[in-house]
Length: 605
Image (tube, rainbow, N blue to C red; front, side, top):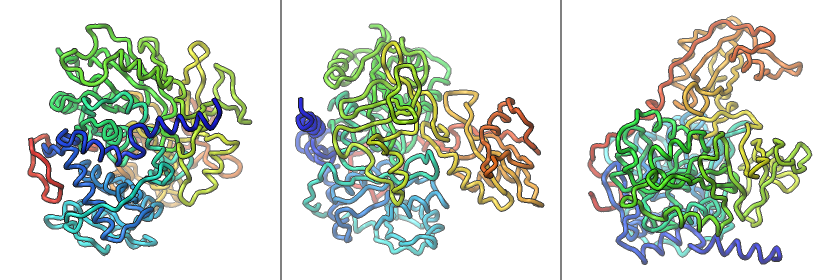
């Protein structure tokens, strides 16, 4: 097969369900107009595919009326998953670029995201207006805003505002046909080497990221989505892949471990995305009778925890998808884990979608390895390369490492448009990442000597794993160093006592003559940092260990914290900070509340 034939075949595979997800959404509105597309659990609302098409067409048409043109950037700054979902599709139908903004972000976090994306419009909510107003004086070009839940009082602000009623008037969408290589979204990375970067992603990236999950999803499936829609896992692995497959979505604003199984059973959900932290929280609940009597049978676990098989057996999950995914690369590596006994999986009367045999056939077609989950006993199994990219483990000279030797995980796509196009205003970082025609992921990996599967080993650069996301230590430091009495702060992660994630450790050196009080610093962090960035442990030191050129020796701080230090660090006081999880982000009440009048019409359950 020639290179041209390979590219043509891969492009056809990606386009088989529609070149873009909006094309697929509209096609399902014709093929199955009354099928429920979104069940919004927070308000007991069902939205059919036909209603979703009308709602997103209306948004797109009114964006055009408001002067939003093809290629313009539109920010979505909403806690409401329902509003974020409809706006995401509406933005794409208008030919604009979807720019999800973290609704929990404020201060410099929010300012950085707005300055990087430079949206012409931001869709927000009443309780988010104050955070936007706080950064408005510092914006180069303040965008227009519209408040989707505009009924009732809200804080005053100085942004030019478009009344939300303007976006509810019936409108015809512009005639936009999306090109696969066209920019579709700007998503912020975790910031593994500094501040989070604004990654510019084409529509084809989305098609390749969701392909395996789409092939394992049928119109009979119900995809449970409770991850935030500013994350790729919630917006794309959950919502977008369901729209492509013609499946239904059980949509929630946030994850709640106590309510999770009630929600799954109530909606008949057959598929979900679970982060490592979510698996840990669900597994920590005391075991009860009948836990396998639920419809959930296909789960993407990313990253794959070492307890994956025990979790699957406990809750009767037939299929676990493991893989390597990040904003820049999508999902170029994967494996499917099976191997439950006949009486250990999903009860046949409750099963929706593909059964184990059909899953294996779909994986064989894509060349995805299907492995007995009981064989994968260590953390970090990633799988094998999907057909759209070549994957390698490279040494410091970008030469392939032999099996069993740890190196830098790198990806080389077979088609254009499968990886990040650029980082906004950061050409040096993208040049460094893509040197020698490889995209260097920043992670260390190894090919197993026996089965040849890829395994994650460690972080090449300084990042912390929190709630299933990679959080930049540099980013937390940048915020902490704004404290007026801190000369320098150093942040790193250590393995949590429970679960498979990290806890944040902060070392702080006071300004001369300005002693730091640990309790005051803890209170300041609670006011100034998002909940997931707040340090679990605080150490105040008289002097930081430094290299000859003045850089803080973080490895020595880590060794000091773990009791392994080779030379004493001048510690003043140590304070462990209790940080309950997931109490920082409580779930909304399961009690049905009135449907906000600003939302498009649906059918109440």
